[in-house]
Length: 304
Image (cartoon, rainbow, N blue to C red; front, side, top):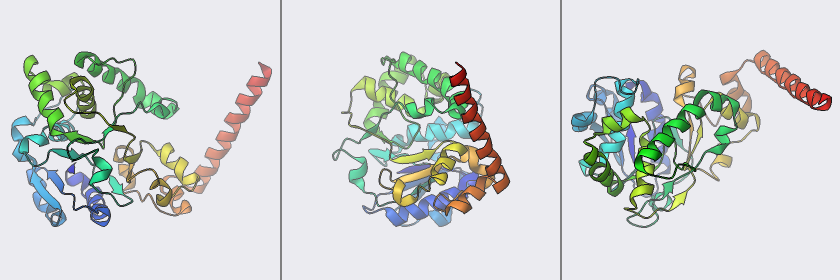
C-alpha cells in the first residue's frame, strides 16, 4: 500500500495506520511518503509493515509551482502516486488516503485477481450525479475533465469508467503510460496533470486503452462520504461500521469538507454523530424545511 501524507494530515494518518495494523492479515507492506520536513513527525508511525519514505526520493518529478491552478502540495501527492513505481519497491500498490480507516480484515486476495494482475475499480458513480449538492459543486466540471482525458487517450467516452481513488496501481500499466503515452508527446507527469489533474483517471484510461494487463473490474474497496449530507444520511439511518463492512474494507469522511470538524469518528453513536455536524435546533430546522419542501412538491404536482 502507498499513502502520501503530510503534517496537516498527521492525525488522520495516525488513525489510518492504527486500523491498518489491526486488520492487515497478510503482512502487507505500507509505504508512507511524506515531505522531508515531516519525517521526524511521522517517524513514530514507522515500524513493522510500515516504511517511512521522504518524497525527496522522487524530487525529479515534483513541482514547486501551481499546476492547473492547484497548489504544489496537491499536485505533488498526485505525482507521487503516479511515479511511485519508479522506486522499484512494488509491482502493484493500493493507494490509500490518510483520512481512510479500515474497518475489517483484509489480505492480498482482496486486491489481486492473481499473483500478477490486480483488480480494477471502474465505475460511473452515477449515484453522485443524482445528488444535487455534489452535482452542482463537482459533477459537471469533473465529468468534463474526465471526458477530456478519455478523448486524448483514445477511449470511447460515451461511458466513462474510472474511480475517485483507492485503487491498485500496476507498475506495468504506469510504465507503459510513461513510455507509450507521455514520452511520444514529450510530456511529463506534470504536463498530464496540467491538462487535467485527475491521476486516477489517467491511470484508468490508459489501463483501458493499452491492454497491457487484463482488466478484472470490481466496485470500490472504500466507502467514501464526499460531503456532509452523504455521511448524515448514514448517521440518520443508524448505519454502523459492522453494516458498512459487509460491502467495504474501509471508510472515508472526506477531509476536504470535514477538516474544520477534526478527525470525524465514523462509528460514534447516532446522537454523538449528529452533534458533530448539527445542534438539535439546526436538525429540527432541517427536518421542518424538508417536510415543507416535500409538501410543496406534492401540492405543485396536484395543481399540475
